[in-house]
Image 1 (cartoon, rainbow, N blue to C red):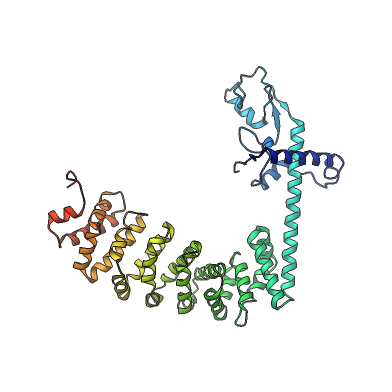
Image 2 (image 1 turned 30 degrees about the horizontal axis):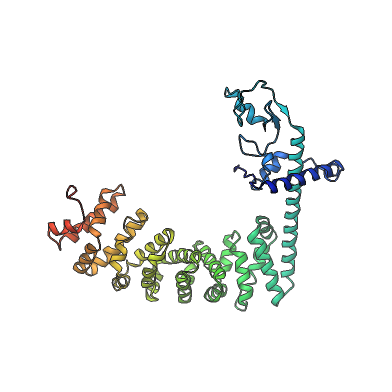
Length: 439
């Protein structure tokens, strides 16, 4: 269980305790205590509400978790019984908080605090249960309404349902258990408006999809709608479309080729990747582009729409996670002749890629070396000259001396040999920027 974080605001703490005292009075009058049909288990309540902000007076100083059986020592400090007894069993004869030596090792049950804790958690637990019931009822009402309404009323119902599904696990469960996924999926088709489609996709992408549902969503008319919405929707909608398409590609039932071969999808995906204002959108787009490039048949199309120069231009702006994915995509595309040519024609490609060696991760270094190697094959002398001037030799020596995998070391060694063919030993050493000792 995670450590509970007591409030640092004394004023807020006083308000919480006042509320607890008020609730205790109410319980004595039968509002909660006398009318509940079942006794609430404190341990269960604490486990089910582990993320709630608990008043600090309810927290055991030893475990930093809510006390279930508070007891007080002769020093006036209160602890959970199991924790303080364990403290004693370790041979300690002091108060854990004050470190005072105990003149009496007996523990006294703190019944008042115990009742306050039970009362406070009972109130919060019952409120949570009521909220969950309200959410479930709201979801069922919206699902029923979706069967009847059209036009803007349908859009509003879908929007309300999407907000519930995004915010509540219980809402997602209710949708799944009551045929909501099939109902929402059925709203997608050739004549679906983008307003309805955007909200429906926002719901579907937050649910667990069975193979049957995925096959249904891979119908050409639904895929066409997905692609259209991704090209024209808001950034959130574009991301939802990209995530849903990636989920469909993971199904691998043979029909995914029709999806990835859509030029309109590829163009829209590159727009999403180039949107520097929304880093999360860039990551989502790169993840889908990586999945698409795993299909050999579509790689030429990715190159033909100008993906390589656009990705190269993005490299300096990407965070580490995005950078690794982008380099992977470029390395995959460099296996094509047209991909290698596109890489060679990018301005400052060699210096920019050399900078990435030994910078982020071993995988990034390997991808970057593969990209440089593919360019080297097209123009050995030109590539070697530019690479060495950009500091490649020094980077390769660092790779060789590092603890990286043997394949990467071998690749670096071979590349260094190729580069050395165009330089004398003394000049190459000077380009490596090494100290006399290392030379």
